[in-house]
Length: 338
Image: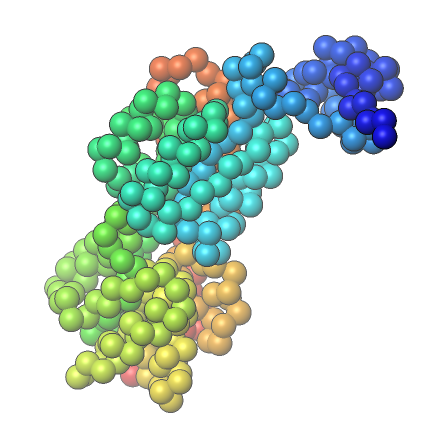
């Protein structure tokens, strides 16, 4: 059987009626090509079944047109929304994401980053700033641009949201409704600076109101609805139980609310629940969840834009930092203390 010859750049150029240089530019740096010409070349390439030889391109250009992203978990609506927008933005510019997760394990994160670097990624994107020195050394030795999300250190580019303020604002809302016995279902605090900052913000708001947050009023749980139920069950067994419970992510608050309702406790008439993140589900549970909107999709889009700007800038230029706004979203799961 005669093997069909693979289409080449010359084949695309001849069919599209443009130069080989224009085809090469369209496939490697699409933002430099006029939109109409780009669409024509992409259509011809697709019709011919053209598949770029990325290894050869990397040898010539010194770039792989891939970006490595390490997130704590793929089982999260927040990180899914972030990655979705990131992928769309990079794809438009001819880049592909290589995604790894590490389940909040520092050793697994280091291994994931090492794998991404070994694949020759042009840049790295990570979540948070808390990691061992050895991992920071690995990142430094990789000598590629780094963008940090949610939290970050000043030496590298970062897209930030104020997690401390998120905790403070949701607690202030609950306090303003007259609640004084407030429980918290938090994520596991170890190796998670976002959860640490949110809990610190809640503590600060309570301290401003002359209240303490004893350890007995905090249930530290994995980040899931089922874990939220477990945390709520623990807090509801206290005597007296809290009149309001804050989940440091929406999933914990939603799970907590389900647990209370399963026990016949009316929300918000007998107990209020509030969360942080504003995941899609928060608006559709009954009652709808009061929360803090943390713009995960915007974080992903801005991270991609920041990385693309960094790839176009000379090494050593000043680190970029973008702070995205957060907002209180008051719904029906919180009410004045009875």
